[in-house]
Image (cartoon, rainbow, N blue to C red; front, top):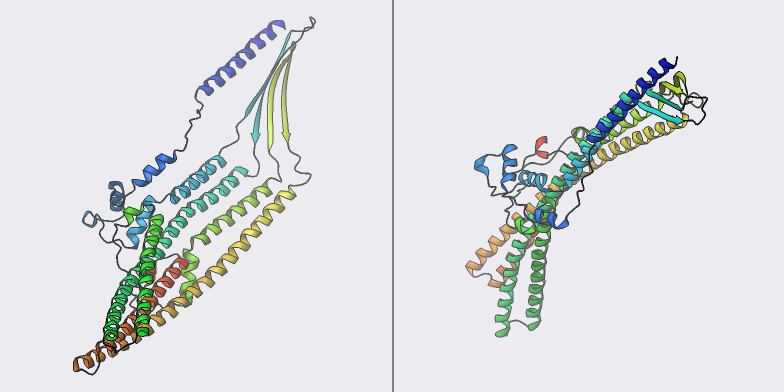
Length: 466
């Protein structure tokens, strides 16, 4: 018996030695912490190097359908500007990092619970007993009700929602660029027309000065003309200042330094040739099928359903089987333990109730989002229609005003009108042109809003721009 015990002790001592050796070898392969401090100076230097003529960016454009003949880009349209933001803007890195974290969580959810090893060693001074006692046991967890598969399902939906978040961030960048581009184009036309008006106002001041000099006009009329000239000059200066603000805004949307953006030539965006008249049913379908926030809400609802399934599965607790051996001061003790939570007593009622309410919240949020999207799409479409009609009306008035100015020019040539009357007629032309420019900007703004509401390029719905 003593010999048998000695052999058993030797065998289990060997097992303890193997376990310790295995732990030591495992420790050798453990990952080590590597510090990665942030360097603000380095980040600023890297940002200043961003350039639309960067070789890596041009290769990125080639990978996305551009040809060598199109590079470097001379006229930047919305698609080219969007590619620029996708390549340089840092907010996409945040969305990608969040997606990678969600992917890691998905891998973690698929990890099975590993068995654990428990051991103990004791010594006794009682000479009547063997001096040592030791034991070794293994806990083997067994999950019930496919909990691991449900956790994977939950994590997969959250990962997909994070992936859609990247697309949502990219679309938001595109929308910001489109709005700023429309504002810059309006600012460009505004500066041109204000510059023309300033020249006409200057001409009027000169004409009044000549009349005052010969006693044909009063100083009051000259002062009024000067005040109008100063007002236009102030508006022109404000427009120039606003141009720099808009360029800075565009630089922020692109992720480029301001001085690089100021050198970029934007492509002119012309009027829409045809009236935007999309059936309401098509609007609703386009919005509900393309809105990224709706697709994200669907994934979040699916994750909530998986969470509820997991809580229901927890009504049946997991089981841990624990086989073990102990040498208890000379006695060999074999054991087999089984442990589990007493979930049968409350059947996880609170966890199920919480997950049920979470699913109800996600369902209510999804329905509210759907209703709001349909409402926003109808409002945006109505605003486009109103802006289209307003632009057509302003263009008709401009045409009539041009005809009046041409008649005034003929009267001037025939000696039936003087230079001052003709200059005021041209000012009326300028006023009509300013109204058309503003109406055109309102239309472009409403089109950008409709496109953002549907989250699909309007060209994909048969709307063409000249």
